[in-house]
Amino acid sequence: MGLNAADLTAGVDALCAREPAFAAALIRTGYPAPRISARGHATLLRTIVGQQVSVTSAAATFARLAALVGDPDDPAGIARATDDELRAAGLSRQKAGYARSLADEVTSGRLDLAALPADDEEAIAALVRVKGIGRWSAEIYLLFAEGRRDIWPAGDLAVQIEIGRILGHGSRPGEALTRAVAEAWRPHRGAAAIFAWHCYQTVVL
Image 1 (spheres, one colour):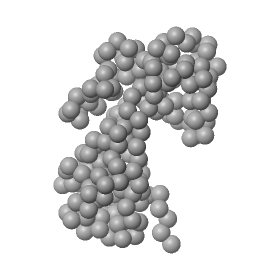
Image 2 (cartoon, helix red, strand yellow; image 1 turned 30 degrees about the vertical axis):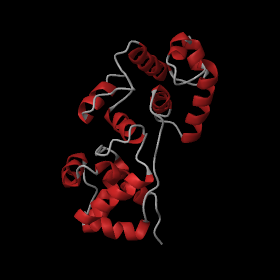
Image 3 (spheres, helix red, strand yellow; image 1 turned 90 degrees about the horizontal axis):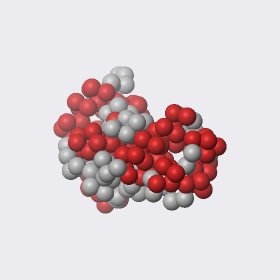
């Protein structure tokens, strides 16, 4: 389960105490709302389906896929489906392969989504073994579905842009700098990421 409202409030308050720029941003935007996804196969499958398509298109494809395979949290449904059926549901050949990779990792027991390693980097390593799941997708899963408090998706473009704005950088910091400046924010970097997304989407008149 992702970080709840109380977790986020506590995390943002801790960040504001360490970094005055966060306190100034909080006055402008207020606290972020929780971003919570369910733990399990369905959430990762939804991540694969949503790659490089619009939110509306991804939702329609996922609905057709769920109608085809049954419970999307059960990877056996993907394993039973033929390639033609997966394509008819809207998956490209590549995404069908990714969906099968995820199903195989879960059904074989190599990936246990109920018991990922407690160490964040080890958990990321376990997730990226799935074809089609990169570091960003793994980090988002761990933050939104498991509520890991110190996940920091420094490669996210919106996070980079907004952290640059909050800290007053003249230009968007790259991934290395975004990762470096956040070291001082441990163990609240998950709240920092959610706050950055919140600020990025907030229009201040």
